[in-house]
Amino acid sequence: MKYLQQSFHVKFEYKVFFTSALFSPSNTLLNDFLKGPGIIRKILFVIDEGVGIELVQQLKEYFKVHHAVQLVPEIVIVPGGEILKNNINYFDQILEAVNEHKIDRHSYIAAIGGGSVLDLVGYAAAVSHRGIRHIRIPTTVLSQNDSGVGVKNGINYFGKKNFLGTFAPPIAVFNDELFIETLTDRNYRSGISEAVKVALIKDSVFFNWIENHADALVKRERQAMNYLICRCAELHMQHIAGLDPFESGSSRPLDFGHWSAHKLEQLSNFDVLHGEAVAMGIALDTVYSNLCGYLSEPESQRIIDLLNKLGFDLAHPMMEVNDDSSPILLGLEEFREHLGGELTIMLLEKIGQGIEVHEIDPEILKKASHLLRVKA
Image (cartoon, rainbow, N blue to C red):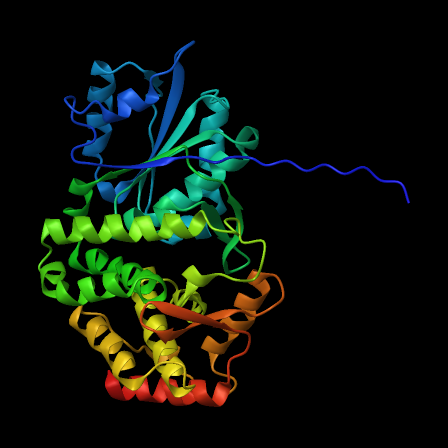
């Protein structure tokens, strides 16, 4: 048999910057990053309307002072939250802006907002002209410490979360601590669950730190939150740099607690925030790990106690597993499909160390669900 074969490696590299008042005229970080040889390129901004329309004027004032790139004056404003990823019209709106303003592959599309905005804009940037330089400016805890520093983009389709998407790293991420101060308590707390998650599967010392600083986090002390965001982002990026950054296999350790969380979001019509759903998913899989004999009872209780202390609900009517027809169980099949055929679920052996399994026992899951309702 005659055939040709090709093999090559592509290096991806990007930085996550931590700053304050990114768009203050005296802050040159963004402009310095955008400087380059040759002709002046364009930058198109897409902004989460929840961040505040006054940001539009800040951007215009910033680029009056700094001229590394040419600001497209028509800034695209979109709603935040999962509704954005459920409506294809918003995706089309960004593509229309790219086309109208002639944003080429050497120009930039910058997204300012929460995880849903970053997901949508990242997807649009990845498929426009087969890839436009994408800058992420996350404005929530969840996006600054987790989704915004990763390589995944996507939108929901056929009623399924992230059915359409790409693996396309940003060219840079800028985390501005001042955005966190604008969040409601609910949105602020929501993002902490992803830090708990990554600590549970990767870093027991970080889990201990979260335990010891839970009160400070609840009180919204800036120094504590800054450390949590930075350490969580660091662990997330270390994982991406591993053997399977684009998830060609079925192993997805960073999705601990997510198989049920994704389904709960959908079942609740996204009234339950992603981080809230993840906290419930962590709780369910923690108790399940304990009942299976992987995780000790004392460590299981520590995790439940921490989630309670941080203010998370541990149970929800749509998370209950009462019988084989419970709606949340559909999340297992959808998760298997999303993984490419083999179900792979991350559980816990101990705090800081996960273990992957390829099946879930419905009877044990029912018991775990019941115990959580009692604990809640």
